[in-house]
View 1 (cartoon, rainbow, N blue to C red):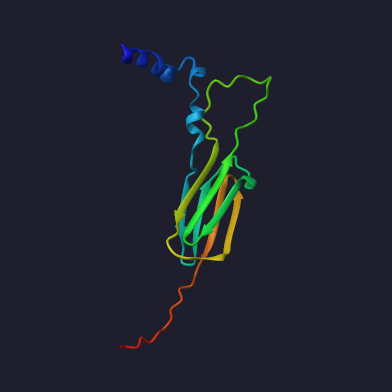
View 2 (cartoon, rainbow, N blue to C red; view 1 turned 135 degrees about the horizontal axis):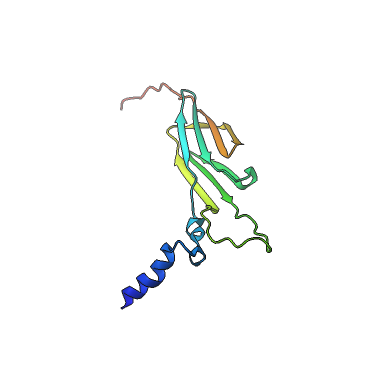
Length: 139
């Protein structure tokens, strides 16, 4: 039967723990997004993004209005031709992009980003709310 062929072939390859060379899980993990944390203080909005193994040259931070986008790429380690055959890999590799909506406006000139021990930290100064008084003429 077709279903038996499927379960005895493909499904066994996926769940076979003896010979992992048949199924390369790293192909599934090529599309990923790093974990992040957003905090708010009285004066700032702070975002920490977990990006271990990524150099700052491979990261980008963009602010468009109230949308903050963090993007980058974790490159696959170069394998030596004479090195060992990799039978199983769960490393997440490839490009990513995360966009979040900030809870309130920030001053686009007062943003600081730093990378330390695999954590990208972004600190943004909140914009001071501008309260204006306007007299509305009744017609």
